[in-house]
Image 1: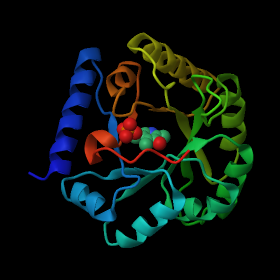
Image 2 (image 1 turned 30 degrees about the horizontal axis):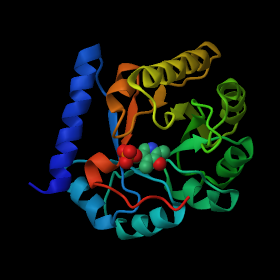
Image 3 (image 1 turned 180 degrees about the vertical axis):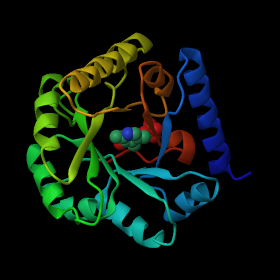
Image 4 (image 1 turned 90 degrees about the vertical axis):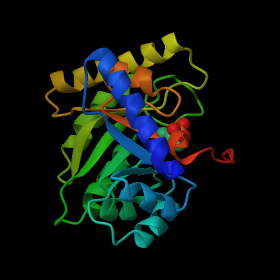
Length: 230
Ligand SMILES: *Cc1c(COP(=O)(O)O)cnc(C)c1O
């Protein structure tokens, strides 16, 4: 078996084990392919993977062209989207996990072609309060979600976060439980939101234990990436 395919099987088994431990099921695995070639995505597709995450719009756009022959691809944009890059997302993505500005939602809704269903979005929350991270503070998530949900071509599906760098097991559980509370707040406010996008290679078990419905896994499937030039 190919390494990528074997890694995916390992991650799926980790997800199943985490689900079993808390009596849950149905977590969606998003394979995050940033910095890795379209050929790797094709390999995973052949093994049954359909949900793929990308961070960088330019890189993702090139991959969508290389992989245009694959039906049923589900593309999740999980990186920050500058206002001048919204059109590609509106036209080709199925999900945006990182909404943090109403202006971006307005552009996406206006640019989303009418024959496509509304773009699924999650509000990104800066759950660890780090200055270096994107996302809105927890208390701003609901107001943004309610405003975005009024837009015709936007469907607010839930919330997304990246846990604070270097968190302990307890700190991860605390942050992910906070996300769970925020999602409950969305539901109380009448939003039809049902998604918690949280959990990466190093913290997927904690995320699943706290109700993650979508985990975003890169390095555990694709291998290590060069350090980002931030
Ligand atoms: C890169 C990335 C991931 C995947 O991270 P790994 O630690 O490689 O699993 C998930 N979410 C976001 C937002 C990312 O940027």
